[in-house]
Image (cartoon, rainbow, N blue to C red):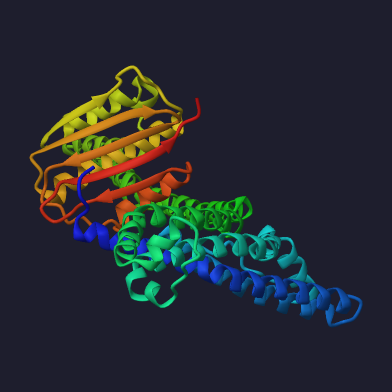
Length: 418
């Protein structure tokens, strides 16, 4: 086993000290928590038949949550990471509704359960840990105190250890040798209650479901906003693009018809109208590709990405299973992620090469667009934000890593049911 460095030894001492502090304060915290739980229960039960029952319950729950918050902080001394609060915000315009909302949260009753359990758990582990630490510390400093309490009738081997100088020095050495074992024992004694505290006081399934519902509601609002913006964009492109060109072509054809009636030369006007109609057709095709590229339906995602890579001004390597097909919504989202990544790289990064990697891992399709450009892309830009909304609509996630100097990596995770 390699020797401990000073930094590692310092961390070990700090962890052991934190564990010992947790164990030493356990009996006090347990006594306070148990006394409060008992008193609060009696008061709330007695007042429940009066109009003060609701306010008493809410006040007791607030104080109990304060105790639980202290316990979460104490447990973090041992666990090394903070335990987040599990409570869901309470809303309600009446006392009764607030009482129902607080009582409906499992965390409210888990707090009470921990405060009741803390007394026996804290007493057993706290006394054991403190006794072990005190005995070992007393052995280490035995030369400083053992001479003052001679006991010639002490049984062997305590008599030579306590009453002779070599024995007291040997006792100190033994205490030093046992320090690693004592530190491990204290850490083990503290880890049990701390983990039990985390199991009861950390956010549970109820909090996770509430957060997931909030996330889905937020995602739904973002999707609705994105759809409204997309409809406005399509309407604007139709009005200002294809519609304007078609109207111009109609006016040009009307002028040509007038010239024909007067035996004028209508050939230039007809040629102009044809060009205007060709431009309008190209605009409509561009608009259709912006909604859903037909190549996705006809030839699949890999072929569509190969077309994007071929149109890119820099070399793009395409990786992934060429025969893999995914649900239409997933393929559409993956296509637009790649399209936006390559477009941004061509416009802003000065990239000379890139890689597009699309592969399925379990129930998730991972899409990564990497370029060797200068980096510094804004992860909250309008284009990236639009992509994020599109990906989140499928309950996916989009991240952008673009440190100054590059490389830039646009990564999307899209859930894909088997």
